[in-house]
Amino acid sequence: MEIQLPRGTRDILPNEIETWHFLENKFRSICETYRYSEIRTPIFEHTELFERGVGDSTDIVTKEMYTFQDKKGRSLTLRPEGTAPVVRSFVEHKMFGDVKQPVKLYYNGPMFRYERPQGGRQRQFTQMGIEAIGSDDPSIDAEVISLAMNFFRSIGLENISLIINSLGDKESRLKHREALIAHFEPQIDEFCSDCQARLYKNPLRILDCKTDHEHPLVKSAPSILDFLNEESKEYFAKVKGFLDVIGISYTVDPTLVRGLDYYNHTTFEIMSDEEGFGAKTTLCGGGRYHGLVQEFDGPDTPGIGFGMGVERVLLALEKAQVKIPAAKGLSCYVISAQEEADEKVVQLVNMLRDHGISAEKDYQKRKLKAQLKDADRKQAKYTVIIGEDEIRTGEYSLKNMATGEQFLVTETELITTLEEQAEGDE
Image 1 (spheres, rainbow, N blue to C red):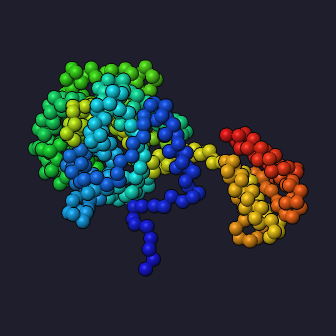
Image 2 (image 1 turned 90 degrees about the vertical axis):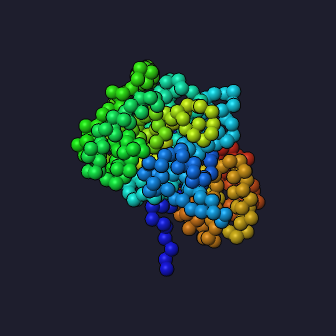
Image 3 (image 1 turned 90 degrees about the horizontal axis):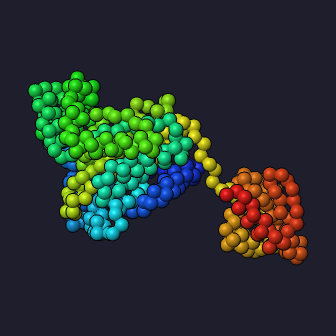
């Protein structure tokens, strides 16, 4: 039997990894600019964390989690999203007691959901995201959105748009909830079984249903914006005002509810408007979550964050035909002209690497001509040929593979030349 990848997973091959490194480095750089620090949480957590944190009316909890029992019968789940583990860590390590508030964190790692695999969506996928915990200042909502928008622009995605909404505070949501129940209840039997189960648990989730999103009652459902109290209206107005001040345009969409139960006040999505990207164009989504820290037995602490699927971002880059900068190439290929020079070649390659210079040699016992071809295939910038004469004189013939120019150098001059060349490439 041929063993292959499990469905919904993929290998990231060496010829693809440069793009991943490019995204990861850009994300790390912009997070550090905004003074967010990296956090790494376990790949699996206690199942209760996601049932309580994500919400038992969500598709993630009811349908998509990879849950298993360990040898002592404890229920564990491969993490399906990043916020709940970060907030759990925030509470467990008492970060709320840190004098530096808010606590600003970013993460990057694999997540797992049992979904139907499709373009840009896998069962094991990579999510990058941030969480700012400990402030209810509307300006940090704008900061979080700004970080995401600037990240996308920094990687070359210009054809994007921001959609925002407010879910209001607890009081506003309760009034809206009652209105939604009254709106859907008379005809709830026309909806899918999931929506019927959600009616009294979390009717807001009906608006986000993939099956019934075209139902007339969904389109005519009461808008959350009509139920915002004065405090919630003022908060949302301030968020929009800060976005205006920093020059980020947006569209308000009262149907934007997001797929997780813990959101309130600001919610947002960043969409790709690239032609050919497909119907589901969301690159990034997030929002504010008051009450989630308390849900994990921490103090009453507000937070806001976002998550983005790296695979969807990669697909957007492909559709936008963004050219990813090439990684640093091979600086020098050291060639052995005869067997007697093999030890010197090994020594020189190691010496170059000790100086931070990328160096390579032949490991297939090829002849001189074949080694030169291999150096060309590997796009070496320079080659050095070592033979008995070079060992005796201590001078090596250094060849610039782009120009064909050759000149004699000592070991010291060789290292200096290659270091200068590497600095020029940065």
